[in-house]
Image (cartoon, rainbow, N blue to C red; front, side, top):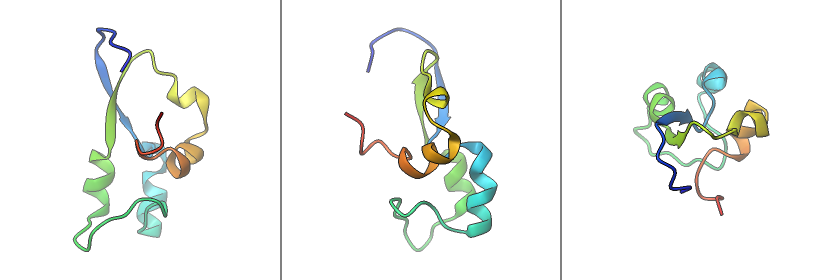
Length: 77
């Protein structure tokens, strides 16, 4: 988006620190829809985006807020 030429890094849309919490509950935040064949662990490990190193995502909001409110790209822009 910023068109800077930088190495991209993977950012989990549900922060990795909270994966065990969601696995225990065996459900995702209410705004994320899944199908019947949903498998929690593979989903959490792959659910993310690539961002450039200059992002300050984790400085903007606590992980719990990132997981519940900023877990998809639908609200961007």
